[in-house]
Image 1 (spheres, rainbow, N blue to C red):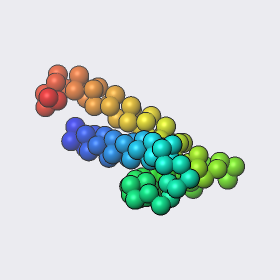
Image 2: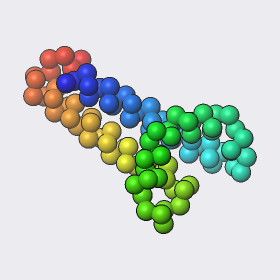
Image 3: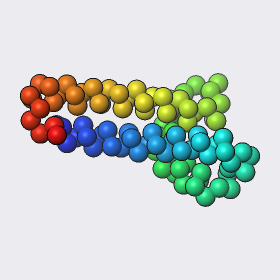
Image 4: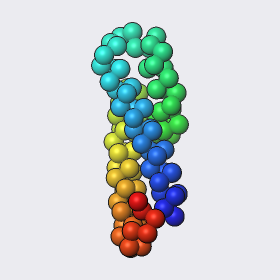
Length: 98
């Protein structure tokens, strides 16, 4: 079970870093960000998470706000998975949690 939780945590971590990098490049690159190779690469990495979020959010939510909503939802999921890993380690008396 610990390996599954660690794998989920890793996938969430990669998605969070991609969204954070995309946000940083959004601020730094300005209006030419759509032609930036790294911005487009980070969009591709985060798309499996932002596309379902676009489907779940109401139409009133603007398209440029969807990555922000996705980031905070993934942050909450990351915190929950981390808490579950700690809880599992405490229950198993830290066996295999090093």
